[in-house]
Image 1 (cartoon, rainbow, N blue to C red):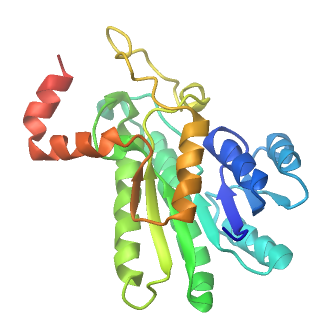
Image 2 (image 1 turned 120 degrees about the vertical axis):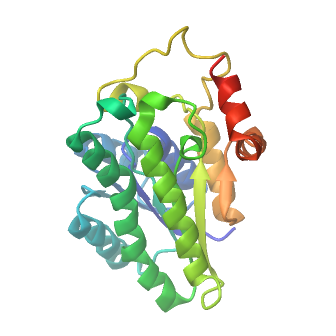
Length: 257
């Protein structure tokens, strides 16, 4: 595959940082964005001279536009834009405050919306490009009710992604729009969640440890090379989602046992 210019938000840690290192190792040019300057510069340094670090708060539209502008100034164009920034929460629905709701929507939905609205005009000018939104399987199945509005935000992101894809598909068939839905991933996500991560009654279910960030990143690399609308990084989850929507009541009753 020819080298690509790839923008990754939320690149200072977790999936974003691992993905950046995997892409750098194969020769892609990277623009890495995040709020944490020291951590971001460390990841950029690990990725070599073809990586540009841009300190940015992607909940601010002007910062997202600045990331695009720096990418174009440095590399001339963008091939792939990955909206990866996100944050969880540890509160059930009835305990949510206005601030909780607004924070989750800003970080998990509005930041991605800003990314879409910022980069798609560039893709239209070029007649091609690939927009990837990193969502979560929790946007499809309520495995963890304490994630509440995080799940709702990811469901909203799934919907926005699908509608954008439909808007573009006839006139711009070479602009790909994808959503990625990992399971639980072994990063600092749980530790950094707003209000922490409560232990479910009886503990986490066996096998709920999910995937490593290396596994998820490798799946996203493959998605870049072979674009498709949706990617469950754990293939078994697609079948599980199908079972959930085939009989929601039965599935949720079984989950509660």
